[in-house]
Image 1 (cartoon, rainbow, N blue to C red):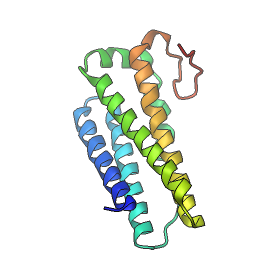
Image 2: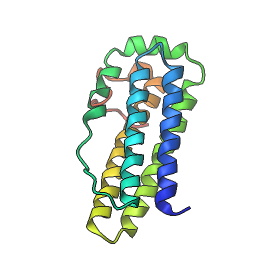
Image 3: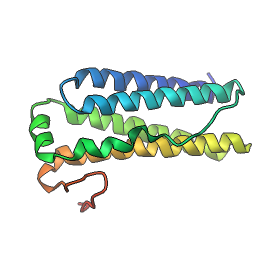
Amino acid sequence: MNSIEFAIKMELDGEKYYREQAKNNQDNSLNAVFLLLAEDENGHAKLLKSEQEKITYDLADNPTLADTGNVFKDRSEFKNKFEKIPNQLDVYRMALQMEKDSIELYQKFLAEATDEQTKKLFGYLVKQEENHFKIFDNLITLVERPDEWVEDAEFGVREEY
């Protein structure tokens, strides 16, 4: 298995994981977030397949996750829901690690890339995965420190401990 094939498998595994989490969160607003992340990962796999097959592809900005800030709007509602979901923090930590691994892999591929199109692809994927990472970092903080969370987690300033 070459590096592109590995990256495709990793993206499809991520898609599968997020779809499972969406199913597990059908009764709350995280369902939509997990479904959007699953679609993003599927799109990343398609981009990588196009790169592998030397098919032309477009790296348009992905506005899909632009509305995730809305998920964090009512922190008191979230606090109540999260207290009822066992092991949810473990789910977020697992996803955070998956995104971190993806970022590191794509940074490595970016450094090794020799042509401009490949460099653009891996630079784009690094940014996409960094956005996913931020989502789970915010969710973990929300669950661990709900009383200290600001009104809008996506744009708020958090004090680091």
